[in-house]
Image 1 (tube, rainbow, N blue to C red):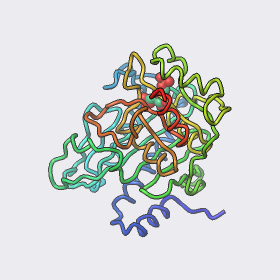
Image 2 (image 1 turned 90 degrees about the horizontal axis):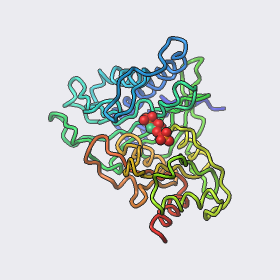
Image 3 (image 1 turned 60 degrees about the vertical axis):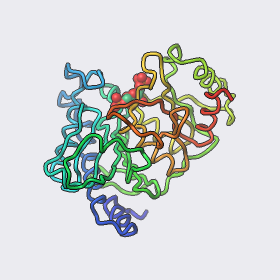
Image 4 (image 1 turned 135 degrees about the vertical axis):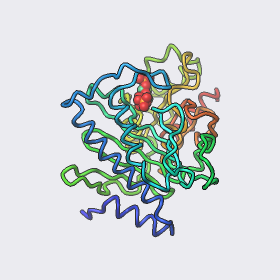
Length: 328
Ligand code: FBP
């Protein structure tokens, strides 16, 4: 097998895009975050880094030791990367402006540890990132600069921590998947030019929330459960980690849903650093992503931690969901 490494791929991407190399450097550093967190997660159980810290984050969610470690690792890795201006993270109320950030031209929005509810049960977890450009290089960095639609994303990806560690990303071109060879700490290309299948794959939703959904949502999900969706028979799968559920959907087709609920009318997942980066990838793999009404990538956030409902996966499935929610 041609063992094409992630670093080689970055620089080939850069050459083809006649890029300056700044984005390749940012992506290379993100792969370092991936390798460091993979190691932390593997050892957490041995060194007592599981469990809760006894504090809660800006989302009001209980914070786990690995949430804090993941965020700190991300900040450390980008501390001296001059082309990055600032980082917005699920774990921080406000943006973190890096030293000399006003001269940086990239903004990183990230969920450092997605699926942290799976930490104590050796379940799948992930890191999600989206990279945006600034149009005010040289000026002080503001959080308002992050309020861009996902159409402006220049690169996005995720890292999946599971039986293997994978990094899947796009810099605007094809979506490529790389698998970590832990023995030498190198990512190799294993899933070139991913395209999401149509007409197959699971539907994925936490059906325990059914009592909190509105009637159109209940009826739409029941259609999938009763094997009456347009593409018929579907399995149900739910990993409890968005990255794990999305990765399966990307490779096998199907749809992941996190509808709005009576407790959280805008849903649980965050637009800037979860929904938009994955929507960017999904559209480039031939799929779609909607909040139930509009494409996720068309939505301009007006706050860092803004939530939206999320329906993401095979294009026909997402279009059917939007149609059914509209009562068509
Ligand atoms: P975080 O763990 O980063 O907060 O992400 C939210 C999340 O864990 C997703 O990964 C997952 O898909 C979803 O919440 C599960 O939510 P629920 O337990 O309500 O089904």
